[in-house]
Image 1 (cartoon, rainbow, N blue to C red):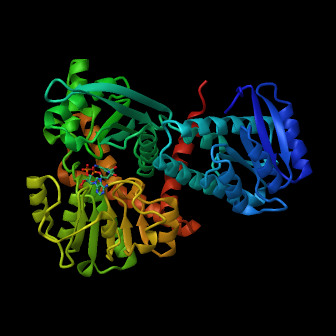
Image 2 (cartoon, rainbow, N blue to C red):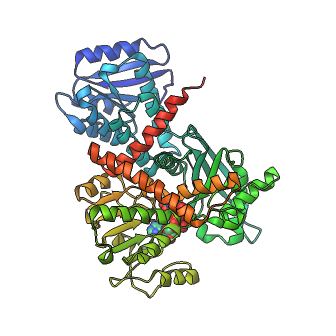
Length: 552
Ligand code: NAD
């Protein structure tokens, strides 16, 4: 925004219906603070000409104009005004189109029939605020993906507008910048750390901690939002959270990792606790990191608090089966999908991207089930063998060499090639944003089981659906981890430990129940599985928010 001075905003209204122009003009002019300077264009060409002169803070856009229609109108305005927030004003019959415009980058939409001074001012104010935050730390493709997925589901659910606005951003965020010493004791590294709590309504918040060089507030917020839907879909008494440190952990020694972890834990210590927010492992962290966080927290409060983290070593109160829980859950759901699609397991092939906790255990379980795992990869390389790889042999190699690079068990291929290998089951279990509009057409599998969070973009989703690929979406497919984390927390708070059989049986029951609800809704309402799973989760959170009311 320019001189504006938040008290005076320059609005460009592109709308051809004089009745609606007068209505919006009247509403804006009745506002005392902020006040509005209104430019009006009745045709798209006039609107674009006015934009070219500059000095507009926000655009109110009708998508049906005499010289342009539908999404085309939005796209042409957006391409000329990349940094100006756009709010679409729409009629009841165009609501789906308006939601599409939001998915394509509009900040909000408003129904002409429901227009009031309050709703219009609020939407304009939020749109401007969101554009500002989008341009700052929040800006990340992942957060945009999470918000767009949420908006799509919210629109199909006809979610109450007040609730929609409250769920679009996390409730609490913390950014810290802190130092830790390298081993030579002369160099001090300064890094950024994050902890984000998306929804505080459901109980304590829950979510992993990621160490990766791409971690940002936007990425952490996207992951926290997905945790909210995931916990709600599994009907666990948690809201979503996530944390992380922007660092490449593979370049650190174990001692450096410990110093970094202890300092990060003490920086976020006021935000976490067994009744507040309970971290767990995510990419780049593991049970050893969880043990250090638990120890740091316990040292600070003066007594041992196992329930402050989950995914810790069993000897410290970790749940049996937690380490493999995400993969075990993934495989339970693959079994359900295989049955549903009547795929012959013994003749099936699988490809797994990522060979860390989730990827390697999933590959192992799939091999144990009798599938031929023909390709796996990590950050350094992919390995392909059409005759089938031996996963224990690959694990042995990685234990010795840390990465797959140089492994003689198959042909080396790139991660891009790996994803495009024809197979029955494809498991992305590394990073987000792997299956996009660019490569979705070349994905050839029957079942896509998302071990990673956010591996598929919205555009890719549409292509996969058209191709008839059965997508087990992340918030369902990889929920085994948080479910057994919940079991671990329950055991720690009750000081009563379960057997591995108990853990796995309960995990199976919860996952299959969530899968069945998701599949039933998707068939009933003609939705893809991701949207159906999201709606299951969002509906529960919305109900809880409404039941609790608003403070004060
Ligand atoms: P991890 O750190 O144990 O393993 C990550 C793997 O991905 C490693 O093999 C790494 O080499 C590989 N990798 C990193 N960058 C890559 C790239 N650019 N291309 C290909 N491979 C790459 O992490 P993890 O715990 O197995 O998590 C993997 C994914 O699963 C993440 O998206 C995470 O959010 C998700 N997830 C994990 C859990 C859990 O319990 N650990 C639970 C739910 C979801």
